[in-house]
Length: 205
Image (cartoon, rainbow, N blue to C red):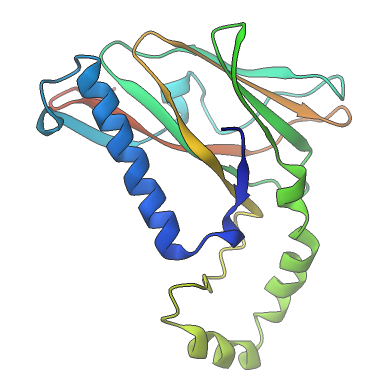
């Protein structure tokens, strides 16, 4: 399901439940694929750029606007599976407008448009400045403890969005992820939130 949900529209509790559900689905998939006889034989860790053949969470330069450029083309390591559940845009002036997830070269699994998630950035930037004031701290203190409102001033992540459903790539699958912008771009700092499921005892190098 190629829906994209801005994090600001999701409660803290629902974010936690979504992460837990993503891990549960990925563990179940790994057992079905024979990585272990039960979930007790598996471990889960946060996804790192190196798991996708990257050295950092940075997209390549986009030379032509309006068409997709390959960002990731990577064969998932033996005896593990990788899942994605969200994307974070760390660039102050983002240019990537869409990401496309594929299995190998031809099977499209999902397309996520990011522009609607950027719509609140000017407001957020102004709010960030306002929240530095002593008056704002009093308001923040009053809102503390409300599970339906995320009041943490995390201005290091201008945009965070959740996928409608997690994507899971099995061992030896070819994970292809492409990015698109409206004009040529030097690239963005884009992070994929996800997990790696592996058998217990695997050595991480």
